[in-house]
Length: 390
Length: 160
Image (cartoon, rainbow over all chains, first blue to last red; front, top):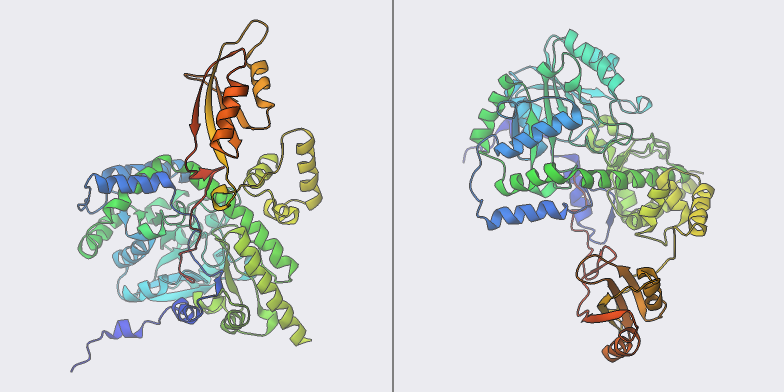
């Protein structure tokens, strides 16, 4: 039989998280700090709206770009929360999670050989999506001493005549880093000088704990060259509904919509109806969850500090990214030993790019009780490592 | 800081002050002082335990009683309420709008106890015009907590 496989698919590295997931799966009694999704259930009024839409028999396709009411709500949300204006009819579309939008944006903008800049550590899908879009991914290694923010110097150092797109993943998974207005302004300057496009993945935008989130699309001269991606998963605890959205200048959005139309048709209808409710009446839920994450963030940082696990203060998402270099182990080794000895799952930083080596990702999307138990075990583990090193 | 402390301990009064302080990014002593101040100012009125009595063999009944009263000269709702809420059997008492005046929540060992209380203590009060007793058959949710809810974490252990 002939080889049924595509070389491109075969050459893709399996995700480092997947590998770790397999190890953890064999340990059903392990407790976890490794989850990348909210611990809240979707607010009831939102779930109820989904149920209601099913009862009403709203089980058909929506238009490719999504329900008109939802696009209008997204438009007014972006204006209200991010001070950016998008025409709901031509500049906004609803996608299957933010993930689909990442894929679409790259496919809509990349020609073979174009370079895509990917600041890492970062979410696992940018790199493979870039590869699948025939781009050449170029990794920018962010530094702990900069609180894992992207600096203009780092950006400049990686730009070549072939650079087409910069991916801007903030607030960041796995580091929890954010980019404040001044950081974005210096990036925007370089991007405009060098005529580069930006895909900004702002899925964690509502989970910002220091001031409010700023989108690069709101800076002068940036709207035209930005594809903004956001979604419902993190802000409204709706991961399983698979619903995201993207807002971009019409010229780009039209191409993204064309690909979406052929590959996906439309985002799930039930989820879209629920999302309309989330956007109309969900501000209080978002604020409540943000406050709760923020409390746990402080608790986890304090606890890590007390056990001598150094960690920069992340101001977004729901992750902390402590440095484990002083134990002389690789991230994977650290995570695997921790799992074996204390049955606590954390994700090795190296799963998010090679510059995540020397760090682990701890999610604080857990109850205080679960966090205390798990961090107590981490502390025991760290103490033991220290004893051994003496 | 007060509202934040309250919103946390309203749900978990047994939280360690140390954890509470960490969660709020404050000093432990400051948090402790603030709580003490709120206790003495009567903002924090007590610390209780939420119990699902259905799971305990001991018999216990709860009744909601609508009470209609006729306030008399020199004796407003407050003083009538006082006559009612001082009874130990009264778990809670509210002045309410609508078709009746007070909502009184009673707890007793048996339905008979409750009925006896209503007929011998509550109804005979001069100002009380009428009562309607509703026995609670099942408690689904109390103090914002769903009593029978499963609390297992169904998320996968590791996700990106």
